[in-house]
Image: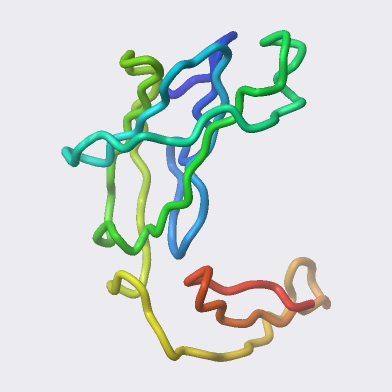
Length: 141
């Protein structure tokens, strides 16, 4: 049920998504009044709706169709989880995804910069740094 329709697309997380740190749950829906998500068997969570998505204008006849919320994946245990998306009370997506993390809700005090050799291509390298606000690594270049 997680396939995009002509009137909505539950984008992230999608089937097979791997989550860690802090990122967005996001998608879009034409003419919704409410958007909610449910992780596993937890209570429904209201998601902000109506942000600008110019890429939906041709489908929805306007651009105020985006929805999203910040999600700290550390609130969920490591392992496979389920997220269901509801638009105006109707389930429109049901996906399984995996959370991998450091098994703490929000880690403070970590730091580190590391080099990834042969990334993104053989012979290239990038430096990554731990980001406490994002609870993940960011590319420095």
